[in-house]
Image (tube, rainbow, N blue to C red; front, side, top):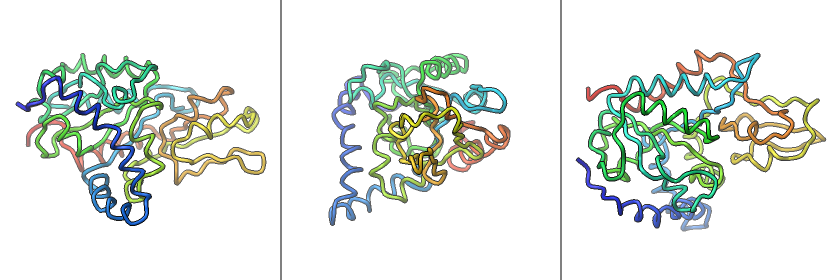
Length: 277
C-alpha cells in the first residue's frame, strides 16, 4: 500500500503552480535549455502520451456523446482495478469556483490497488462509470493517457499498469494552460484523436472570436474575414465548439470505430490496464 496521507493534498496544492512556472521557464534563454533537458523526457514518449476526448463530438448527422462514452466505458470495463482521487490538484491550487475540487481523476489498472485510501476511493466498475457520466455531464473535458508523474503523486510503482483519466476544466487544467509554453517535443505528446476534426459553418459564424480566445493550442485564427483552423496545432479538446454562441463550430468524427481502435491501441502500447501480466 502506498503512503499518501490526506495532508499530501496540501503538499500537491503548494507544489502545483510550479508546473506552470517550469513550463514558462523552458522559454528562458540558457536556463530554459537546461530545464528542457529535464522536462522533455518526462513529457514525451512512454512517460507522457495523452488525448483529450471532446464530449460533444458530431458523428454525422447528429451530435452525440457516444464517442466519449464508448472509449471510457471500454477502458473502465477492461480495468483490473479503479480508484477516484479525492481532490483535483489543478482546481485545488487555483481555488476553482466553477467546478468541484472533490472527486477528481479516475485511475485505472492493476497498480491502483496500492493507492492509499486516505486520498482515494476504491470503486467498482459501475461506480467508475457513474463518475464518468457525472463529470462529462458537468462540462468537464476528459483527458486520458499515460502520465508518468502520477505514479509519484499517488505512490504507485512505475510498471506501466496505471492509466490516468482526468476531467479537466479550462480555467484550471495545468496541461491546457501551460500548452503554449511547452517545448515542441512535449507538445507532440498531446495527440489529437484520429479522425476527429473541427468544422466551421461559415454561414453561421459571426466572427465573434470566441473560439479563437478559447483555443489553448492557438490553432484558430481570423484571416481575410474567415475563421481558419490549423489541424496540425489542434489537440481536439472540443473547447471551440463548446463556447461558440452560434453553434457554428463543431467536432466531426469521421469513423467512430477507427477513432476508438486507435486510442485503445495507443494506450495498450504504453499501459496495461487489464491485469498484472
